[in-house]
Each structure stands twice: as structure tokens, then as C-alpha cells.
Length: 299
Image (cartoon, rainbow, N blue to C red; front, side, top):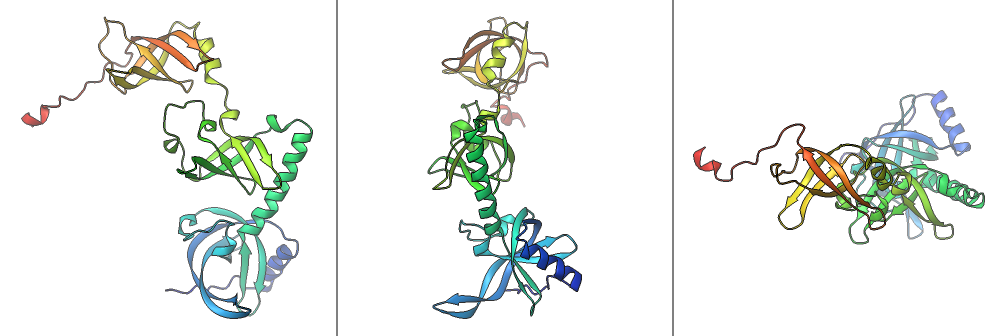
């Protein structure tokens, strides 16, 4: 197992800058350039012992290197930090080892500091009745299939989102709609300052597509894409407004296949029950052809 040995600073000027940042407990940024192991003194049973621990190696401005132990990376336990390689993180410098010229940092402490400030901000916004109008930037951290919760990091706080609050379109599985590390906009629905629980919603930042669809009823035609054709459930069309709706095909048109671009007319909009129907009027890009299932016999 390779040991990490690179010194964090190479001259007094860099050391003085690191000392100033540590003294002021400033939150700074760095890129995780690698993850490895380093032997360090660890307190066990009342005494310090040498132990090999996993650390994330950060590159700071000015060609300065810093190290974050696994247990200082997050309040959550990770089996490995390998998945964070290449990511940009914020942290606080917690220790400068002058003998080994090593700067130790903590992402966890920076998150706690930002989370406390975020909670204070939410309290002030709620008191002034501005919370419902405020949009925050968040990063998708993951999804728990057991609890059906999406986790989003906002201003250092780990917030949660229910599947229905991802978007207005509930026809597709939420797991397929986002990627870890994706930046999104959210609004805070509710928060518990004592337990540090914050529920957010991406859907709350998006205009209800049924409002847009009602205005499209006056248009001659609108564009859509066939997403599914079922002999039992019928035809489904994805519209640009972000809705998948039922489609009706006149007898004079060929049967659509998934992927067909279609022109449609809005026939009905039921905002209360979240339903709508369109009538397909044509195939402006032509018809896709289904592959003959028996064609392999002649290949």
C-alpha cells in the first residue's frame, strides 16, 4: 500500500498563508486529485498509536497540497473516498504539522459551519415570509431506494427530497431522471432547526406544465414525440412542456411507433386530475419503420 508523503508547502510564504487561513477559520476550495493512505497518530484507548488511514489529497491554489482524513470528510461514513476524486470540495484547515510540513483539512467542519449559517438564513427568510420565494442551488448526492429519498447538498446541509418533488412528470422512475453531482435549483418546503432536517423541492422551482398546456389549446398544432404504444394502454406522447399525455390517432394515419415525431392538437386538459389528451395530426419527419422480427432469417 503506497504511502502519501508529499509536503503541503515548500516555502515560508505558503506556510504563512496557510496559517492565516487556519487562524481565521476561512472556508476555502480545493480539488480532490487522488485518494490514498497515510500513517498518522490516532487516539485509541487513551493513547496515540500509528495507524494507516484513508485520506483525500487536495490541490489548492499556489500548488499547495492538503490532506483530509476519511473521518473528516463527512458526517456520513464512506467505505472509500475514491468516488470523490476529481470533485471540488470546500474545507477548513484544522492543523499544520510543522515537522512533516503537512496541512490537515476538514470538509466536515466546513459543512457544519455552512449548515449553521444556512439554518440561520432559513429562519430569517421564514420570519419575513420570503422562504417560499427563495431559490437555492443544490448538488444531487444520491438516492436511497429503501426510503425513496433523494439527497441534495445545499449550502453545506444534507437536505432530502421526495420523488414527487423532483418534477411535475410522475410517469417515469425517479432514479432515471438525475445523476449524482448534478446541480439543480430547489426551494425549501420545511425545516427542523433542532434536528437539522430540511426538505426541498425541485418541482417548486418549475412552472406547472398544465398551465402552459392550457395556453397551447389555442394553437393549431404542437409538436411531440411518441414514447410508448400499447394495445392495452394506448399511445403516449411527450410534449415540450414536460408532460407525457395520452394520444389519439385518427384512422387515416399509420400506426405510430416509439420515437416518432408528431404534430398534435390539444383536445382536453384536466388540471385537477393531472390528465390531458392530444390528437395526432401527422408525422412531420416521416414515419419510423419497425424492424421485421423475422428479418434475421434472411441475413
